[in-house]
Picture 1 (cartoon, rainbow, N blue to C red):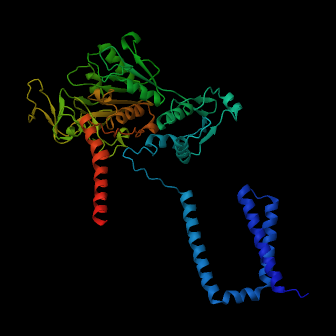
Picture 2: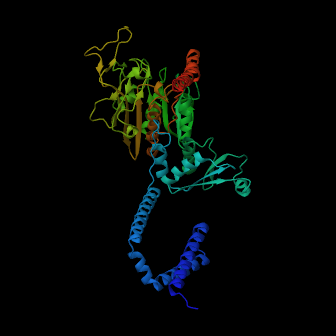
Picture 3: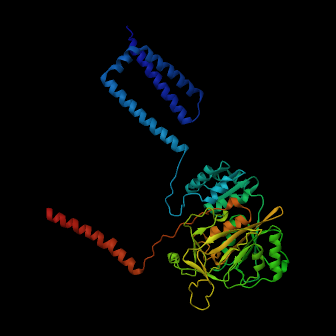
Length: 506
């Protein structure tokens, strides 16, 4: 029997190719290079090369055919396209880029979260205990991990891994833990604000205290009413500050554990001894925020003078028309121009802050003063500081009223030996009340000021946003009109038109 040499080497080549494909499939399925896979790939490659070499003349003749050349060109082009697509996908995976087209950038990490993650010095693990996968949380944690190699996360089924659930005393499905070393936090929700707050709490070694002065008609710290500061208290706790109220009369001094002292809108004058306590606190390198409303006399003039700050006896009015954008009048000046200072460095040029009934606060102009004063908040050129509202005729009086732009707040610092004292003075306390804290950048202004005073510059940022309420509320008549138009008239018109066309063509 005569053996066909060409057929033998052809079968050897086919066998080698089959072994190579089998070895590659084993590797992709098992995701590890097992000895059998290596043997299949190696032996297959040898047999394939041997088969091609034994039939080299036939292979060469095959590739010289016109049809083969066209097929080869097509195959080469196809492989080139596949290679290009593979390269593009590889680069996209290594350098992924997402585009967030929502108005509030709801699917992008906030500036504050990115800063906190970028500055992490400790490893943090996020554990989610549930039987079901949480795709939204997984996407969020993927963004966290992309910003910091210190972040890891794990989704745990408590029934499959009861030892982990027991280790962290997990009591229910859906519980989320943020762990760093021996410290564990259990955020109430898995949104960005709560997760970032939990990361702060488990990684910061010291907790600073913000003290609010009470006893002179200040904004009530725990109140949830429109004029209260309940939202301020909650926001400070989210950023891992302790918050408490202090009465300087009973304490007889500013408590030593106060990292920042806040005097928020006193309606009555402080006793001279209390003002002296605040002055002494600042002279010792303390940090304070003084929010003083128009038509009040908090008895803090000596402090302002010592810090080269001029607080006007006036009310700032703004007739630029910006107020109409938010449904307010001239008595609520809007600020869209900010000084060069860390507190406002993240504000965009057209970011707005709103100040209901504010007085002017500016640098005293004493070039020889020890304090460095930066004017933070400038109103529009169409505003002025009105000094006589009691007459009932608010108009700009040349030589009596200050023409805009008017400064509504300053940030000052002064070196006291080896310590740096810091002071923020703003001519309004309502901007941080529950009613206005969420308006535009009001909240960022207040919390950034606290961050700067507490020397937590890493926290100065733009905070996570909540989705805007875009619901459309219809009256009963509008609902009826919508029903008849969309459910009855429009479908009825389509049916009638179809019937008419059918009748004409039949």
